[in-house]
Length: 427
Image 1 (spheres, rainbow, N blue to C red):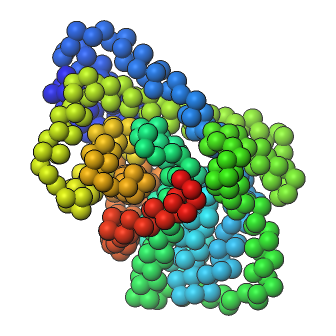
Image 2 (image 1 turned 30 degrees about the horizontal axis):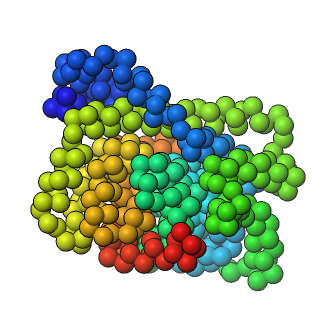
Image 3 (image 1 turned 60 degrees about the vertical axis):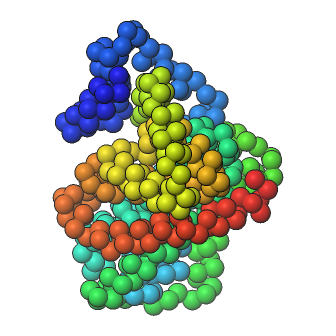
């Protein structure tokens, strides 16, 4: 079946079939021509993959993000970011990156970062004298921290595939790598701004004004503190945290910023349902795809083969980096996690690699694939929202590819970035 499964998948992806449908159809084809299993098994495995209590966190976190992405919340974050770094050379670019990092603690999604504050920052940067394709490329690069800074849907799915980590430990493990990526992308923006002469025309606001803006943004930013603090101190589980996040978002939107009204809720719930449905469809198809690999014995064969090579941990991590970067060219992070983690995580554990370190390495690698051609989702989201050609965005990406590569190497060779916070937090 595997000999039919992979060619069918790559042909369908090359034809432009959406990832979820490409995986499901390739499984149907493999079962029809390569085995005696009935086709109904595909549907059964898709439902089995979704029949999980921890997965309830996915639609609730998506709903919380939709509620929190109202205009007042997004504008509060953008104003805070601009007040902190807007006066620097390349200040609007820095504000773009910083606002994405702040918004990541609310959305947990790279695409939401790019479509929300990112689209607003592109317009602001264009008015401020930046080239529009450069503003779009910067938005893509800064949005990759969405699934790395907690909360993160990708981390929830990862923890379901690898029993040696928990959602709480991964949330803690992602904080420092996410901040590192933010810093390196800001450095890349500073370099490009220096070369191209992107300067800020705004003076630094008075300290009192910055404090006033920060106080106004605190209710929005407290969501990540509520989630991480509650999980760390055992007040609630990650799934319960997602429900609490929804109620907190309602409270903030209705009574603090007063930008949310009851009449807005049906549309918000519908948008969240559509996004959650798309995510869960991908997860179900990935589960069926992974099932074929398991019954074919491919994970066990690859694990035994790699262990027999007697690789050192560093060589193994470098090989995994290469594999995941190539895989990310053609596959979104969620199916990548479901297909590859059951294969690679046991090998890394056998080599003595810290599970949280390896998990962040995998998530960062696959997330970077969102902004690489030919099927990077961020490319098409930003191109659509900014009315740009994808090719013009890709031409502006090299400085940010360098920054992301440096971040990846630091995360690979400095495991303390991923292990220190989980350790001191008791995970």
